[in-house]
Length: 154
Image 1 (cartoon, rainbow, N blue to C red):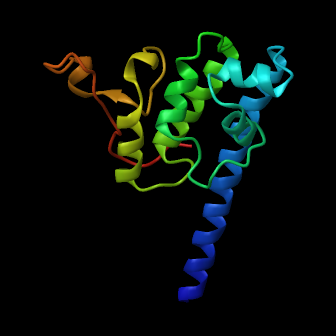
Image 2 (image 1 turned 45 degrees about the vertical axis):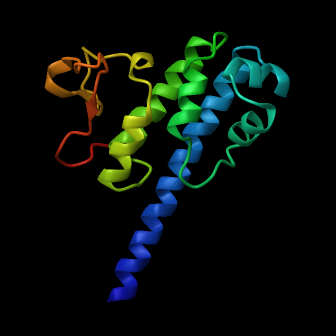
């Protein structure tokens, strides 16, 4: 019996990795569709080095996916096309919701590493990133986000 639960865990993890890879491929396609065809152009548009851009755009990024610092750098890029920004924010929301795996603690740490001022506050749709204390900022002026309790929605 133990092997069956272990097999199910591996299959789910493989499915999560495939879903994450698919989202990163969508991001790469959005960069290309915005007219950034060469690696140099893509790296500049994403605000990343050539090697980091290449790794991401080839969807061969490490198993844990895009880090908060990489996401922050991309969102801060002045030439980032709107569709690419949308794909990045979708990725952030899905990763924070646990669609790509990770414990609640890992997801909370991921969300905490993001530069909140670069994330839109979703008013019309439910978001997995919810302002703590109904969006009230801390004394430091920093906004805080939490991962909500309850089951993961897919």
